[in-house]
Length: 118
Length: 110
Image: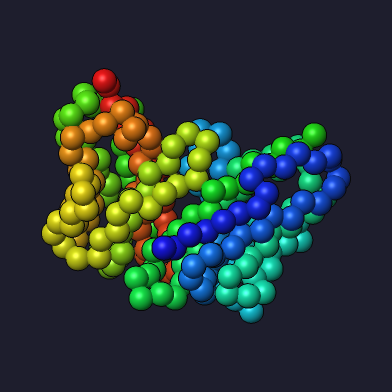
């Protein structure tokens, strides 16, 4: 149980284009989803927290107009990197916590999306 | 400032021995504690969570929580080469977000 998927697993795009990453909770309803970014050999950095049907809460220093987050249902959240630049190249990981008999407030991570901007 | 601290390692342990990973946190009021394992190039995987003082065992893994001393540890018995990874300690400080430590890199030596 508590499986989270992400799509795509990797993507290469040209500078200036936009990329959408999907995060789905497959076997539970995710009341809250989180988006992280991780650069090589560094720890996870939380970008934003989103609750279903509400606007996302962004961490300090994260541009909300550049990283658009939509959490339209209890099983799907999307992150769109707009006008991507090479410095946006990173490993993007979503996680979800939510409703199920076995779930407390633990977060389950998706497999991540490796973004390369050329 | 809510903080979670871990020794970054690397921690090297012979195969078959017990690996002991430690984590301290800054907020005495924290209620929820988690251990994640992250292989290189992969996302974190939840391996243990603990909410109450004492020990919690799951297979070869034991999480230990001491709220008075503000530390949580993870013991891995009968260490295997496949246990080689970075282990992340994470704590809820009551604001819905997990605060992660920087992780301890564990290497199991065959």
